[in-house]
Length: 181
Image 1 (cartoon, rainbow, N blue to C red):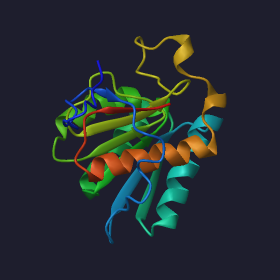
Image 2 (cartoon, rainbow, N blue to C red):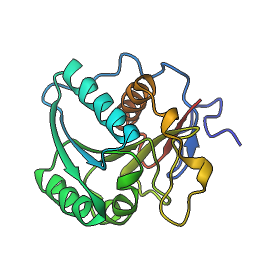
Image 3 (cartoon, one colour):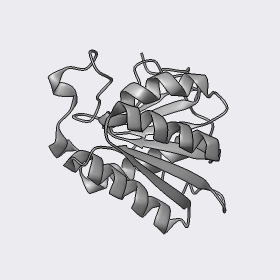
Image 4 (cartoon, one colour):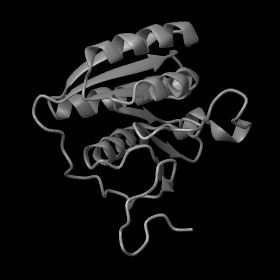
């Protein structure tokens, strides 16, 4: 079923939508917008996603804080640090953040979260994800081998993912999965 019906109904939480390529162009965060980026691991896909978020923030003069982690315990610690800062948005880059984000986002409903290059298995209304073929990890024990291919994470995809995800959050379309074609 097409979530984006002709009457442009708001997608329900957990819905997956396929935005028109470039439909996020021109959607810019307000002055003073604060983002905390959390990365886990130093693999190529995570690095490419983190670079995409960093470039997006620099181009828009967004206040960006980057917190790095290795393993779930550090992701948990950094995520709690990020929540304490109360930024406008907390962004998780790649598969390494999924397991911890899926637990903590539901406990922090006042905070908006965006995961790029992976998705939360059961997102709450404050957790939005952007995925595409080869970048759709859903968590340990849930995903299949075909869900993640590092080669599918390109600088252009990373740029589109953060732009589309932030546009969705800014328009109040949260708790959904954006699937880039």
